[in-house]
Structures are given as structure tokens and as C-alpha cells.
Image (cartoon, rainbow, N blue to C red):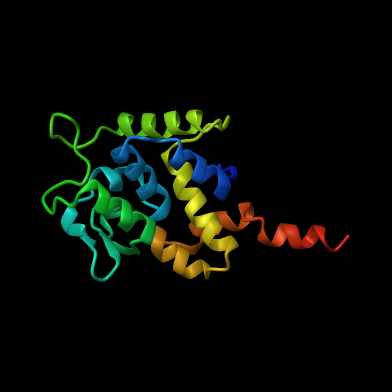
Length: 178
């Protein structure tokens, strides 16, 4: 039986900015920015270590990716500047709870939901929505789908092609034909 195609929830660039700006806690802001500006999964944010971030080369080495696959993503300049404000520890996990432990999955989900609510977005926004938005915005800006596939760590291009269904770059052009 074929699996039904459920399109991912994608926020506009304006909505992404509102979500990030609505967050005053710098650690929470950083979580949101890693989900969007690096396209990381929730588990990848939880397991991110300082030694995985190469400031000189401008990359993030994602070592705890899904399916035990490693990948490299770019370190966005906005992410780099906030990391410098946050304070570069250079040791262990980037995100630790108040008890010094790895962030809980529910904590990250709550950070995203609370930020979306504060920003006045009435959609069911979760951590993966920011990853979907990352991929869709890159596609709309003209990035090659094979590069997006590499950044997301997808084994199959078919997985990445879901974003062609929600990217409105070409849909807007069709409207101009009428």
C-alpha cells in the first residue's frame, strides 16, 4: 500500500524571524537558530558538542545524525554571532540543562511551541517545522536539490523532493501566466 503524502508545515521567512525574535532567553534562541539556520533535527541539537563546530572553516560536523550517518552543514553567520554572545565553552555539549545534563526532547519541543505562541503564530509548530522551513527556503532561493539533500542528510533524493511540493517559487510564476 502506498503511504499518503502529507506535506510538511513550512513557516515563511517573516514567521521564522518573529519566532526567533520573540525569544529573549539566549540559550532558547540558539536552539531555534540551530533548528532553522543549520537544518538540524531535534536529536542532533541535543547531541551537539562544541568540538563539532568549526568556527574557522564555518562548518558544523553533525556526528550524531539519523542512521549513524555523519554530515557537514554550514555555520550561518547569524548563528556564529549569537554563539559568540552565548559564550563558547569549547567543552562538552552545547546545550545543557540546569542540572548540567543533555537537554530533554520535551524541553526543545516546548521552546519551539512557546516561541511560536509568543510570535502570534497559530500553527502547530514543532522543531521539525524549522528544519522543513530551512529546506524549503533554500529551494525557493534557487539552491540545487542535491545540495539540500546533503545538508539534510537524506539518503534518497525522493525524501528531499517533498520540499518541491511546498516550495512556492514556481507556483507564483504559474499565477503570473494568467
